[in-house]
Length: 274
Image (cartoon, helix red, strand yellow):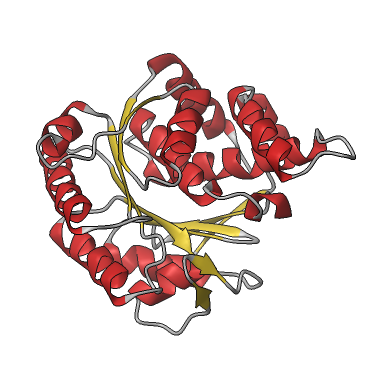
């Protein structure tokens, strides 16, 4: 299967330095900014409702992450998303912990109904919660990543008319008609906070550089995340643990090339029967 799109998209990020406006959570904001910078894009983290819409209109992509939501960030996200829609700027939503509390679920629904989300990236529990399906979750974490979530991704893509990326042991990215599966990653990615948020930032960076093919853009961001996790873990010395893994992960992002992605990504693509 051709992986030439890795070359096109990563090159566009590295040479175009697209601006990615991120309204994200305060636990992982620095990591998201640094991951964005590491692959060549330019982050701006503007949370205030007084400027969120204006900043979104200047960017090439908008990432909304509800990891630490409150009424102020919720209002800013809605305004920013609607501004991005007016200027045809891709909107990426990370519904962190959507199934954990009624507030998070309602906020996710408000954002999905109040704007056109172009890429929806979450774990299976979050996506199931949005689709009113039963799920296993604990706080913002998924408890079940052991099955193929291809049909779940396809259903979410059709429901919300977007690219749906359900990440887990095997990541499934769908536009409702076809699905890309990526089987990269490492268990240590679950041992540091923010790897899902960084993955969404990488997807947003790729979407900013390639807005005409958001399925492949999302797949590229997710592939970078998984492959970098494997490289970072492989570079650890015997006495090193999750702290050093975090540093190695950022190094792997910054040293990522399309050739590395083509060599190391374990990916399949198929047509869905709907």
